[in-house]
Amino acid sequence: MNDPLERTELTFLLGMAFQLVLTEFVREVEAAGYEELRPIHGLAFQVLRHGGATSSELAERLGVTKQAAGQIVAYLEERGYVRRVEHAEGGRRRLVVLTDRAEKHLAVAGRVMRELEARVGERLGPDELTLLRTELAGLIRGLAGADLPPLRPIW
Amino acid sequence: MNDPLERTELTFLLGMAFQLVLTEFVREVEAAGYEELRPIHGLAFQVLRHGGATSSELAERLGVTKQAAGQIVAYLEERGYVRRVEHAEGGRRRLVVLTDRAEKHLAVAGRVMRELEARVGERLGPDELTLLRTELAGLIRGLAGADLPPLRPIW
DNA sequence: CTCCTGAGTAAACTAGCTTTACTCCTGTGA
DNA sequence: TCACAGGAGTAAAGCTAGTTTACTCAGGAG
Image (cartoon, rainbow over all chains, first blue to last red; front, side, top):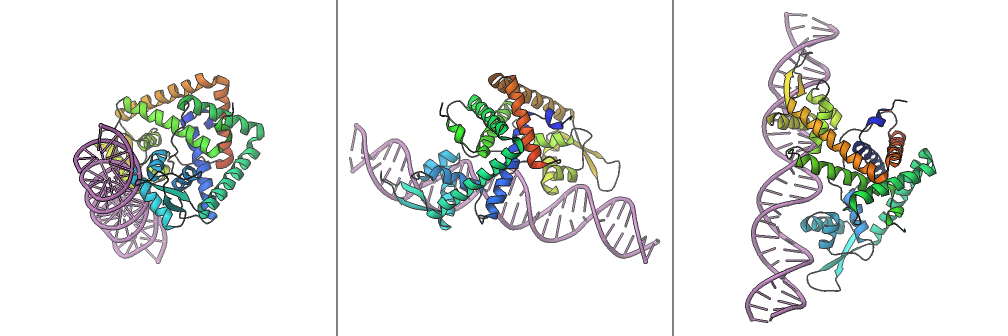
């Protein structure tokens, strides 16, 4: 064998694996007609998916300033993926909620992810895939503790 | 158990794991006195480490335009991490090579990575770590084939 | 009321690229 | 020998996706 990957640092292995999976994911989602959406928009949908949130809450979950979150919301609103509705607690608060269009994107993105994971499973074998997931979960628990890391990766 | 990570998509698991490891790596390298260097500079050092390269070659390996590579080289040169020397093949070519200062950074970064991997190994157990590495290598081989992905991740 | 806090917005700035458009140098072929 | 094609490098402007600074507005506590 003498695989150069055997001697590659864990950090690089993780980076390459993530990069490959993400690139493939983005490629397929774009091919499904979502060229106007970047990964961060999908992450925003994840945050908003159950009941919505204010843009300040969104900012915190995404790890950006609230101005940046405001720009993202405006971008998504222009294109019909979110609506701003009244917030139950009043004040200046506005609740950002997903439209059907965004729900559909979530469905497509979920399907693409599951297909991608299935393809990886075919190559690795089902037990290996389960093992990989377990090891990754263990690593994440070990480094992050109880609170999961913020959604938005920063390079 | 009922761990929410069990139901998390593989793509997210990889992203979180990479994010956590990278953040910790960056934090420790900065603490060692390298606040002026970003991850891409470390990647450039990896490309240049054995015999150097022209900035066009560097651009290709990093996945950026040659202008961007030129800017990176200029930044590193100002701070004493690289030198531009005559290129054996002449023309307008200039060979960008590392200084001792950059070699020292490579040593420190390597040590930090190995310590980080060792800490992950302690939590996971040595066999688990080996397994994780094997699964990741398999995933990378499966998705990338023979040619490894470019160094620079694009989000 | 007044003042404080937190939500939201506006405008200017910034980093880190890319695009466009050159200037050099050298090897090739008429 | 001499145009000229092509690759290396540089310069300047433009772009994207954010941050910083500085406000306005709404409600609640005292």
